[in-house]
Amino acid sequence: MKTYLKVFLALGLITLAAAVTWMTDNPLAGFLAASAGAWTMEHFAGISILPDDAAYCSPLVGLKRKCQSPTMGGAKRLYIVLTEDLESEFLTYELAKTMGQFTGEIPLVTGKKFVEIEAWYDTTKFDTEMKVGGGFTQSIEFKVIGYDKDIVKLTALMYEAPVNVVVVGNDDKMYWVGQKYVPMMFEAKGVMPEKGTSRKEVTFTAKQDGLQVPIFPLDPTVTLDVTPLIAD
Image (cartoon, rainbow, N blue to C red; front, side):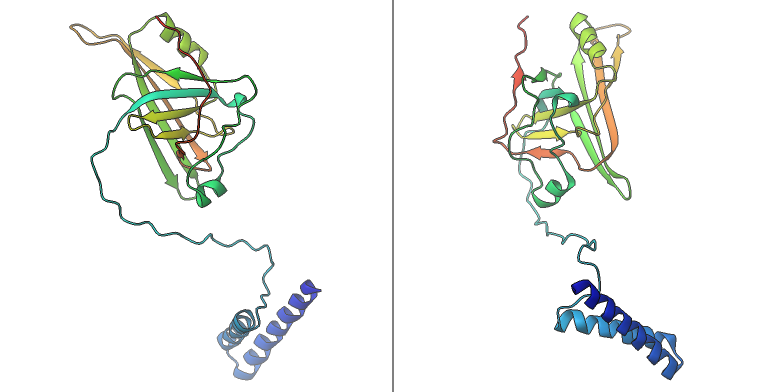
């Protein structure tokens, strides 16, 4: 019944626009008359001729200026998980709009865990961008020192492996990089110094675009199930 009423009102507005246009010989006057009629119905009678499920922009929220205080930058831990070990896509655009962070249990497949990477000091960084019409872009980089069997094994295992990453800052704040269905895939570059005391190192980098969300903060209550590192 409500749909029929909207159709009837829409026809009435069209008739009003046509009549005003005919009487004034001015199409703009007809358009303005119809617009005024639609505005009056919506604001005084609570009736809109638009579909109930019409898409609207979400209301914006303000952002209060925050004073900068001394903080500890850098990251002390990285945790990596295969996206196939996640049961569902739990970081969504709707969650980003409403909460801005994730709180709860990470939906890991039973028996699956994160692995820990101890990157070298002051080498871990991430970036996130928002692009009009292109969603969000995320990237991450870290370095490990040396070049040995453990690094070679990790490099081989991560070849074209779809993963997500949790970065834990030196201030203990956690950030999730990637999504289940838009994963990160790492590239690696190893460097042997030419001479002197320069160090051998391997740089791991990953970048992905077309994500639904920026890099996501995790609530401090979130816990990760991690495979313990094997002692040397």
